[in-house]
Length: 344
Image (cartoon, rainbow, N blue to C red; front, side, top):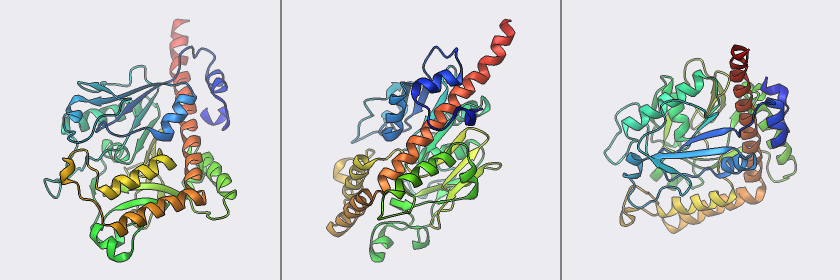
């Protein structure tokens, strides 16, 4: 149904085509697990479509913050909603806090509170069962994966599982981490996917105008990884970390990479990486990188911006969120159909 709505609808057309009785805006529930993340490009698109965004963080998560503050856009709540309710679309952002399904290797590897993980998993399964769209980003993708029984674990600390914009000798110090703008290898299933397929086409059209690169790069920043859940369709992979993106069912999507990051946020994250920013530690305990590493990271991000990789990734994200909003509108129409028939 959503495919029939077209791939280039403007906001009013989205509402009218999805169902003439959609008198209220699409309602999007955003879970900010640690409270400090931002929606970035995803939020821009939701605002453009005049979606009603309800971004929440739990009191338990906020209480863990030491040197950071919760996003000004996030509403602090005692607990998350128990079910989708009237929300049409679920977004789960990333987090500095882990969501491992195994014991963390050290006490320094801080984890999301178990009660919060359970609440998020129940919501993910609730939206999935209601066939309402779900979008998990980075830590959010790991939460989606474990909601359906998949394992979330640390990446091995070796150079085979490392992607950093640094010389080899510098990479060894931070092995088992992916950070920076790196190429995604999209699988044949992605080309046929009703949401990701059009997004790839839009990205490639943007790259065609950029003579300096043709690679499909996205921002990564993680040390943990997930297994692809049973029954899911894998959409992309990388040699350094195989599990990168998947779709489960019709409307549940998970991206290990940060599709929400634009050029401004990318530069901000480069600075955060360099100063060793950690909202769950006192600033005096942060571990900044050396000058050479700081310069390399900044140069890497600036080059990706100037070559057009970042603007192409933004086109992918805009088209992806557009597609998920169409799916949300279609899901509402599908749910409204039986109610209308019962009233008759």
